[in-house]
Image 1 (tube, helix red, strand yellow):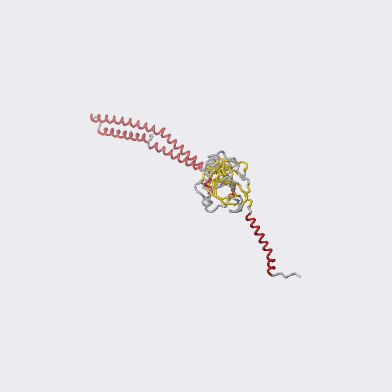
Image 2 (cartoon, one colour; image 1 turned 45 degrees about the vertical axis):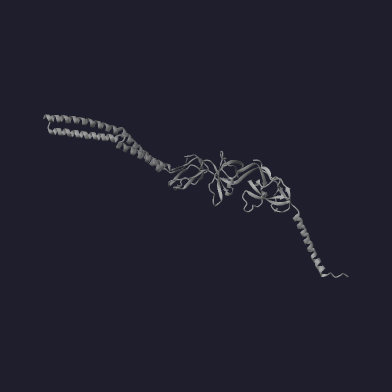
Length: 419
């Protein structure tokens, strides 16, 4: 016969498993809390360091010109197609020019007529006027002698007063003829009015010819410089309007690469830095470039600054207008630097300068925060300028927390090849 169980003992039996479970949990928590956690760690290593900045760029030629007609006309011929290389002054589009060509022929004929008139004035008018003046001088001298003779004869009573008056009138007529001849010679001289009128007619005819030639030239669209046709928007027989773009031509010149770079990296860039460029379509044909200039302002919408790069030599033959390229610019290098893996840096602390960071260092078996000063930075490594000793072991586990007991486990850091 079993003895009855007291209520207190029954309650104890009921709660005993729960108490044992709690005790086991506390023991496990204490064990985990006080047992050091194995954590990957590294020491700052002396190694070469090459800091680069990577971004995308596009190909741009210095000038892209849209060619259009200055008048309304029908297209006679289109002499180029897209992709054609052109030379400066080469005719690209011809417009119908029958009317302006006829106007030019007429202007040239008028010029020839004016020139012939000027030559005739020089060859005939001036000599004739000179001869007429000589004849007038001779007539004047003869009239003067006749007047003197008439005066003598009137004084002797052989001539009447009427005869003397006739001699005086003859002299006046001779003098008037001489003045007219002199005026005619002056008019046909180098500074005379007749020659001036002839020269003015020649100049007016030349101006009319030049205007007709300019109007005819407007019927041929020519390349503004050496380059390549990018876009053709016209066909023969089409009637074009003034100002409408018919061809787009890239004018040859120093090739440039344009890249919008986040303004955060502006301090790393400066003119003269060398770069390596790669086209996605030609991954096995990289080429060199150089930072030429930085835009003086930042794009307010995108928060980027435009960087221009140039090629030191001849551009590769596969480059095309607006082609997208990958650019890597060398912004800094060290032959020997104290480096850490970039993942050793903790989440940035509020208010900490950009050149400062926090790492966890193993000290006396615990994780301790340490503030360090940084230098160059790559995609995987960072230079440490101050804050760490050669023997310090920096923890790499992002889950480790300050004060935690740790057991550092050394790992081999990955270093860059020497630049």
